[in-house]
Length: 202
Image 1 (tube, rainbow, N blue to C red):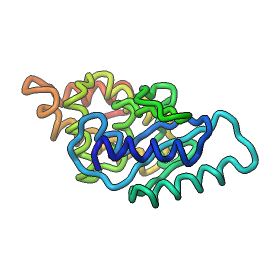
Image 2: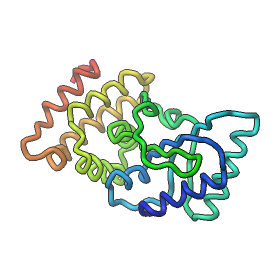
Image 3: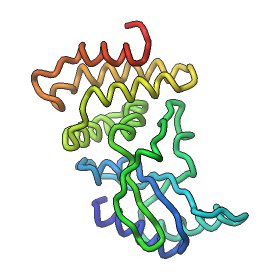
């Protein structure tokens, strides 16, 4: 899937739904628009209608289904994608960045730093490739990134997923930090900042 295919999906969805909605795109599709070269076959997004009526979500679901059939692109959506995982995405909606408007549909992209929370939480090989592509191209400062990861960790309910998130964040910084931020990048210093911000012991 390429940028034009993503645009076409939301252009068609706007026509099929034909009402005022705001969408925040995440997942691999957002990664493509931020600069990742890894292909994706679906779109993941949060969607909020300007006005909710008793049949609003049924109409949204039907519009998405028709759009999937017309484009061949699978879709996963929710009113609040923060519920998709145990590690909170914080105030991702307020920090989303405007991308394009298609008719009555306003499309935003999840901020790369917030987007990275979900990628670190899952941490499959495909997530690592997405992170490498986007963080390198968008030049996200490491200090901002690790402080945001720490905030997400602090505000998430205690669970085994929190422990995995911490270890995966540490692994990512040690393994890939220099390829993103350069040879002078100090992984242990970044991890120490992460620990301090998260208020956890090494």
